[in-house]
Image (cartoon, rainbow, N blue to C red; front, side, top):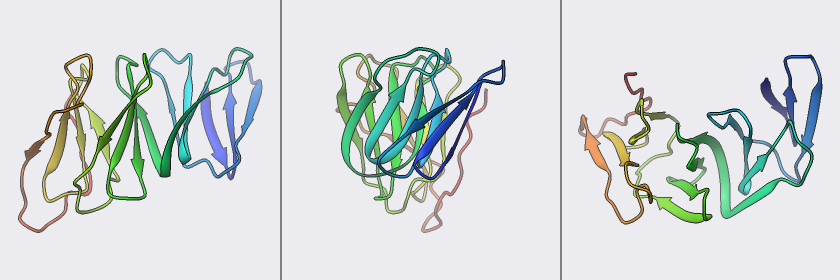
Length: 163
């Protein structure tokens, strides 16, 4: 399947050519499939929405004030992380809906990359790669990130973890 969006509508096209539409009250800003492909997530104003495209039923709404501009699942599917219009990331632990706010960035986060086993999430938006720990069951809650490759006042704009 492939997901794509235009304006307030997200679409999923399945291998058989069938297309399913998901309309939202505000513009779709980011899309991501879960690692197993059973769910797909939409970043939107004031949160994220989880859809189950191959099944019928109501979506799961994850609320947090602000403009969410990008979205990614952790490789194990336990966490959902969004980039925001403000200089921050926001996340949810999907098992219980607990919120995670990852802030302190001097610039907007425009690039994210998970380590191969999902123990770390690297991000741009600072004069270093900001790398959040996700090895524990609570992810980065209550933990400080690593700052790798500090570049003085030069902002890191893209990150990529080696597989």
